[in-house]
Amino acid sequence: MHPRDHTIFALSSGRPPSALAVVRVSGPSASLALTTLAGKLPAPRQASRRLLHDGAGRPIDDSVVLWFPGPASATGEDVAEFHVHGGRAVLAALLTAMSAIPNMRAAEPGEFTRRAFENGKLDLTEAEGLDDLIHADTDRQRRQALRQLQGLLGNRARDWRERIIEASALIEAGIDFSDEGDVPAELMAPAVKAISVLHDEIAEVLAAQGQAERLRDGLVVAIAGEPNVGKSTLINQLARRDVAIVSPHAGTTRDVIEVQLDLDGYPVTVIDTAGIRETDDPVEQEGVRRARARAEDADLVLWLVEAGRAVDQAAMPLLGKSGNASSPSGGSVWIVRNKIDLGAVEDVGPRGEFGIAASRGDGIPELVDALVKFAADFFGTTEGALVTRARQRDLLRRAADSLRRSLELVEEGEELAAEELRAAAYALGRLLGRVDVEDVLGAIFQKFCVGK
Ligand SMILES: Nc1nc2c(ncn2[C@@H]2O[C@H](COP(=O)(O)OP(=O)(O)OP(=O)(O)O)[C@@H](O)[C@H]2O)c(=O)[nH]1
Ligand SMILES: [Mg+2]
Image (cartoon, rainbow, N blue to C red; front, side, top):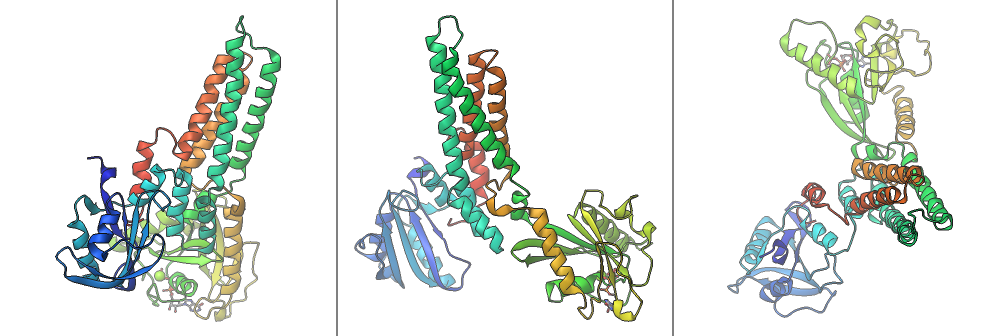
């Protein structure tokens, strides 16, 4: 039996216990699941209140059930939904009763969406958008995922693919009709024009990217500096809770501490690190090693120094030779002077320097504002961005490259140009999940939640 002939079920709502829970069923036995557990089949797409019983007639829970006959359902198959009370025992009883029904089994992660995809309910970019929407933590992530789910990239790609196929039809028709193998110019000219427009449209979408892909992962900001300058105090201020131990002892923080922040809709991971200094303590040495490594990889380093003290270039290995521009990975470095409450007269230095008193909160709003601006610059204008994954970017780039090559090859021979057009259409087909995608499908859907 093909795995698709199985009827699958899963808890689609959050982790129990919860007030209510939704168990979804999809596949040919969805109606059997309803009649077995809830009595007669309810009217399609209407909520019906039913007392559920297991196969042996023992009551399970008072519930609301829904019946979505395929193909007008989320997966394209027959779908049933059971809205029950979200207790662990209720769910255990319901899921046990479901597994006792012939041909029914628990769903794998993403299997509902995969079936929807296989039944043409959504294309692969939309499925990726759905996954992102479920995992969106911030408002900007949500909006970007929703655009993807609504098919903004998918629709463009479908349109491009059709136009590429039309252009290759023109060229191939020319090849067939010409005796000498030279396609008449009047046939080629419109094809060449169309290909060139297509190339420019795709190139434009690729260029308008900024860092939209990074919006999924977020920006990494590392707080680093010498011991005792107030790094942990600052992360506690930014997180507005006590995530890190603060103490007057130098060398308090050893492990890297991370907090996720939502800065005006931008996802930002802030990390607190061990104070960087020479030490004989092997544990602290390891902390310093980790601090350096994480700061080097960060998109932005807040280098904390005590106000009134000169910035010790030697202790600032991150800043490299140049002094202040960027970290080795190309991230930026800002100098933040802490403890301005101690009275050191502070001329707030060149651009990118801040004066704060982390323990009292002075200067924190200004620092946060600057971080939001940094994030806005970093992510660029993601509002219009269509490409949100490396996979999508890679395939679009391949399509654009093939189109460009086909333009270059037109002079040399129409067959070569037609071959490149096929490659471009193929890349867009892969983007949409239309062709040759078994390998990507597994990778994408496995990362989904069970029940999705
Ligand atoms: N006066 C004053 N003291 C501060 C300020 N910020 C932090 N401190 C104090 O400085 C000391 C060190 O603070 P921490 O936040 O633990 O410093 P750290 O940089 O994380 O230190 P390590 O983890 O050891 O590298 C603590 O006693 C804090 O209360 C400030 O703005 N003003
Ligand atoms: Mg610390």
